[in-house]
Image (cartoon, rainbow, N blue to C red; front, side, top):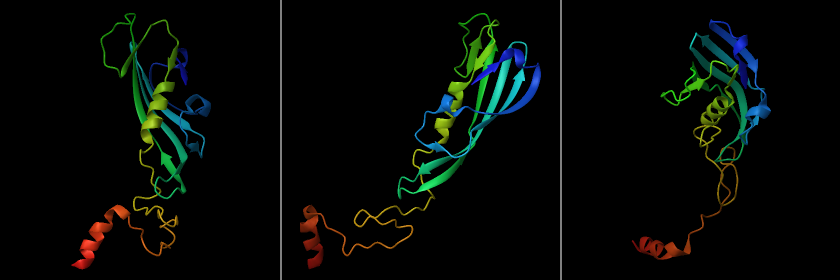
Length: 166
């Protein structure tokens, strides 16, 4: 997503706009709603601060029961652009140096990073999801297990005989 510098006024401004999904389509999950972004921009003579918030909902698959569920995300990010003719400006990675002659601010990578970090590593439809029975493959959230007896690994057979003697 490109922001044109010449369209920004000095001071504070807030912009809400849709995001082109093809620019940020880096995840396997499907977007349920169109992605929109709210940008709070502060423009000064030598610095531009951008505080962005994405708004969307994803269709995720639960890692335990394999059911689809909706997951609302509103990740935030902050980007600071420092306007300086010296590109070798020693600053932290969060501060990006741009030339005074540049007219475009590219925040596409910041949007992608924020989106990726907002998706949980373990996707669960709800925290107490019971998952799927490995024996009869029923979803334990909706049905009781249909397994007659849990299979015993033959390597543990000797131990089970010891316990049955006691």
